[in-house]
Structures are given as structure tokens and as C-alpha cells.
Image (cartoon, rainbow, N blue to C red; front, side, top):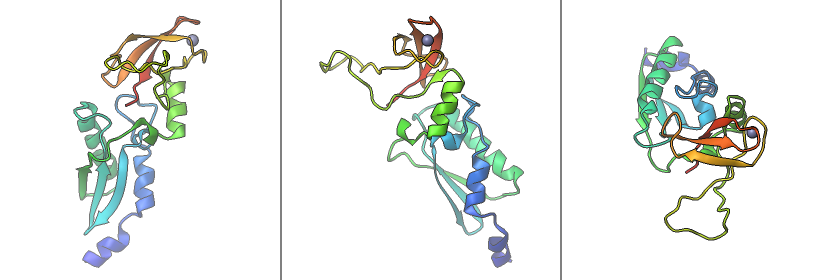
Length: 173
Ligand SMILES: [Zn+2]
């Protein structure tokens, strides 16, 4: 019986494909795969083990994401699911896929900049580095941070000086 179970278990690639359909609860336009938080999918004695790395420790969305993953896999007939959390190495915005960044922009959220650029050129020890963030509406780099916290703690609120549109920026760290 155990052998049969293993034989009929969906392929790892199939599980990844299903996870690709699980939206990020905070930004439904992108999937959790786009977000880059799923580190590993494996079968372990008939149990589907999904390893995720949270974007922010204490990010309230993680519990929702865990539930969404379980629900999605159950919908595809996987009964035994184990979610493990891997904290190290820490998630970075570099793990976000290019398609994820593109979708984020289409959703009106500026995708994370590759690196925070210190505009002054001088390292200020206590001031957070100010990333050069392009406006997702008009593409202008002439933007300013209006609040370190946007609609969620993971985002900052920016405003475009050129087109005057406010937008969320997905924070880098
Ligand atoms: Zn703009």
C-alpha cells in the first residue's frame, strides 16, 4: 500500500505548479512562488513537505499563507501536508521572480529596488538608506517616501513628484 501511495503521489513539479496558483494574501496579483518564499517541496514517506521562508519574521501574513498552501494542496487531493519554516538564510527581495516584480508594478506597487542607493553618497549611520524607487505609474524616478509604513508593515508609502500619484513600495531588506 505504501508503495502504491508513493507511486501515485503527484510529481514535485506538479506540486510546484499548484503552488504557483496560490496568491500572496497581501498582494493577490502575485503568487507565493513569485514572492520567492517557497524554498523546497519534497515527499517524505507519503507526506508532502513544503519549506517556506517568511518574508519578515512576525509578518502576520505568514499564517494566512500557510493556510492557503495547505488548502490549495488539499484541493488537489494531497492529504498529508507538513509545512516547515526555514529562517536561515533569510528571505531577500532578490528571491522574488522577475515576473513577480513585473506583476507587482502592474498592480501599482513599486517592486523592490535591487539595492538601496544612498543618494547623498555619504553613509549615514543611523538614517535608513533611501532607495531610488521608480514610480509604477509613470516610471519617473522623481519620488519621495511619505511614510515608512504603507498599507502593511512590509510596504512603505511613496509619492511621485512628477505625476503626483501615491503608491506602495515593497521594501527591500
Ligand atoms: Zn509618477
